[in-house]
Image (cartoon, rainbow, N blue to C red; front, side, top):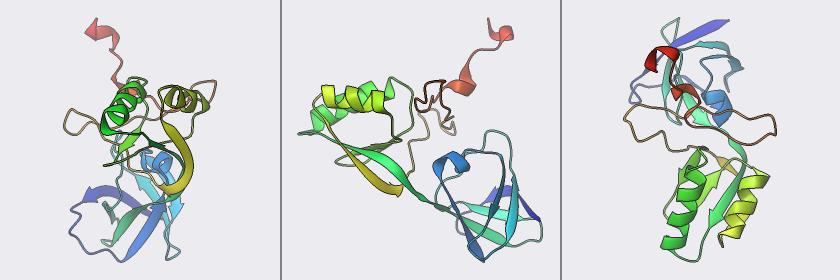
Length: 167
């Protein structure tokens, strides 16, 4: 099995690609197969979240491009920009991964959040598309996605809880 350990410049030419869901792109350690059939072990720096278009350096010197896979999502629309911004605020306040587009939002399916969005006057449609949520407001910070015991969606700040030495 070949190993990928580094993300390199997106301008680098790739010889193959690897199709990954958002959940897979959050993992620092992963075994996956490229579209060309190469079995690849990802051993990236802890906390690395891959984006569509990222390039991975393989231990043999070759390069593989990361492609965001289609996945089931909730598309959120509103009657105007103000209502969409209000919905984005409330969804974001729940610390879940959210993709912001000009006229709609995308989030991972969550029945509790869907009910909240609809209660705020938004419409929710189930779609299948690649998912590339916002990475955070602090430069290179990343989304940390997890599910609670009830299957609710991601928590952006899971990895940002203060340690005992911060208290």
